Image 1 (cartoon, rainbow, N blue to C red):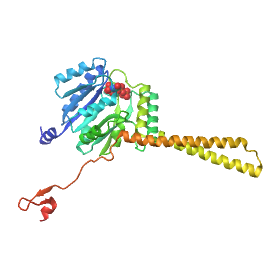
Image 2 (image 1 turned 180 degrees about the horizontal axis):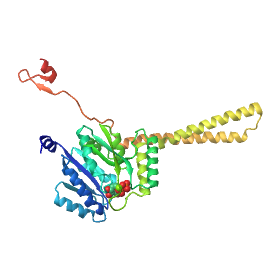
Image 3 (image 1 turned 90 degrees about the vertical axis):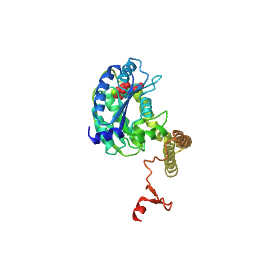
Image 4 (image 1 turned 120 degrees about the vertical axis):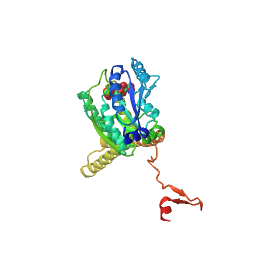
Amino acid sequence: MNVKKEKCLKENRVSLVVSVYNEELSLEAFYDCTQKVLADCGWDYEIIFVNDGSEDGSLAVMKSFAKKNSRVKIIDFSRNFGHEAAMIAGIDYATGNGIICMDADLQHPPEAIPDILAKFEEGYEVVSMIRVKNEDAGFIKRITSRAFYKVLNMLSPVKFENNSSDFFALSDKVADVLRNHYRERVRYLRGYVQSIGFRKTTLDFEAGPRKAGESKYDLKKLLIFSVNAICSFSDLPLKLGIYSGCAVGLLGIILMIYTIVNKIFFDVPGGYSTIIVALCFMFAVTLFVIGIIGEYISILFAETKDRPIYIVRDVIKEEEEYDCKTGDSKSREQGGKA
Ligand code: UDP
Ligand code: MG
């Protein structure tokens, strides 16, 4: 083993977080493949399987891995809490200085792991994997996925990568921010990963077909997921009241001018128009008041989410040297000049 590799093994440890829900048919192939890649990657590693309340034999299969490999850890949930909860738990329990989240069905290719580790070695702290092809997605899933990113990017001040996935990698520093500050119940984990800052990069990958079994995300689950993502990153829907109140108020003013002009110059009777103008103003006031309530709720929402006001990557300060004779502390540079 060369010196560089030995150094890496001491310093670098990658934690692979794998969420598992009824994947007994894929797990063997997944483990064989990832274990081989990890053994050759030059980093120390651990594989954290999060069993998200599987009802099939997944847990027994994972236990058999743990028995033969002490680098395998299993977090066993009491019931099904969902994919994102499983990833969050995996990140919480990870001990590596690099963390990679991926699915257990081999749609996230383990062959990409060395490229991710190379990005960590280059100094990147967040690696988002962009799905350029999804062999399992049908026409409807592809269309809805594209529409989802369009709507999300339209409504949210944060800009998200199209086709980002739950295949991503974080440094331990980034993971610490997630562990300490992003503990929301209604959440969009991929969104946090992309909006958290730090040195970011992307890598493309092609999602092959599922190794075995079926997708756990039906259209209903995807709809709930999309609504949660939008609500988690946009308060624009809460402001609709203000905007529609303004629009209806403006319409009332235009109608009022039109009615007055008609009355004065053309002597058109204005009874019917007057009712519509009055209605417009009443609706404008009602919608405006709803909008103001929405504004307050949006502030409350932001406060309860309790997201960090700022996130520090590093505090940079020159190290000081202590002068034994005088008892003074000097910065390195000053010390050098003296
Ligand atoms: N998964 C999970 N909990 C769930 C649903 C899914 O841990 O409630 C896991 C699942 O075992 C897989 C990953 O999340 O490892 C992605 O799920 P799936 O392949 O069904 O999603 P798709 O790739 O179809 O979007
Ligand atoms: Mg899948």
